[in-house]
Image 1 (tube, rainbow, N blue to C red):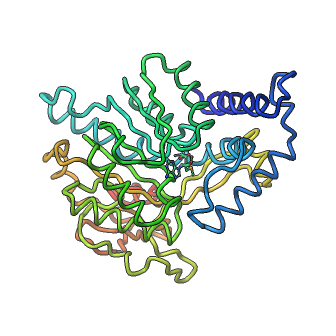
Image 2: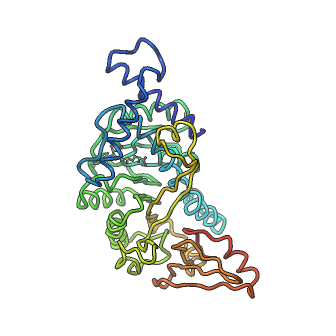
Image 3: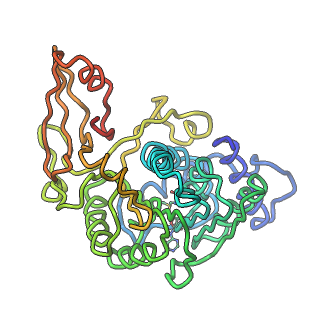
Length: 362
Ligand SMILES: C[S@@+](CC[C@H](N)C(=O)[O-])C[C@H]1O[C@@H](n2cnc3c(N)ncnc32)[C@H](O)[C@@H]1O
């Protein structure tokens, strides 16, 4: 389903709820929600997010939910989509090719989206995996129900269950793919750790956490990573090792204008309502994020793991110089290395020139 068709449908469902509540449902359509109300709602929401006060987050009213869907859905979707497309899908394809007797081991049939909001991560996951069953857990009822209604209409082969809940672990059903997209920074660190631990317990195959690309979020991510490793889960990305993170000591360092905590950026076009609500002059934006993809050891294919043991992650934009490219990587040995690829090695040089921040150094 097209991203913007999905967004429009969720917005329409929310506007209808708003009209019902405000008793102004005579005219159908979005016109009855004045544009300035939306812009004000977006300004309030952004201000609270900028204060980074976990307890102050959450939606106060339906215009804020609509503003979130219009302003943030495209970027968070782009990030989740990118991680699934570049990290999980290639792994599953390779593992099932190498292990012909695997039956359904490398299929994603059930999805659990915790703090689902308008179903951003769910939509990205369904695009790649077409699961038969999906559960969205979310505390904001109008948002959850609006998104669930759109999913039910458009994905008839997927049973969509919505659960209105404040992430009480006891309710989580087991799933092949568990998603926690931009939610764990909305609560205290201790609650985030306990929600994450509970999410790991129900992860039958893969678990993905996505957080904003800030030093504070990276600090939380380091705690989540340690927890996952302690509980026996295998770190798949972005790290290619389970050793101490070499960037943990530099979690809020900026040197020579370069951010040294581990994070990435996804560029996306701003179009239509997205551009309008952002009121920016640029036709694109760069969404900073950090993430952690871990696997239940039951689905870690030893052949693939062996093939990938020399993987290194590009952790800054490569620097192209005359006749050579300098690439900063986090290597599988657990150290940061600056690799220099010269023209002498033609094939590697061509590949290095195409490398981007966040890629694997191949
Ligand atoms: C920033 S939004 C992210 C929504 C969606 N996952 C995405 O990526 O666009 C955070 C969502 O988490 C929900 N949330 C935050 N704390 C929660 C809690 N304790 N229980 C349930 N949902 C929660 C909020 O209501 C909100 O919808």
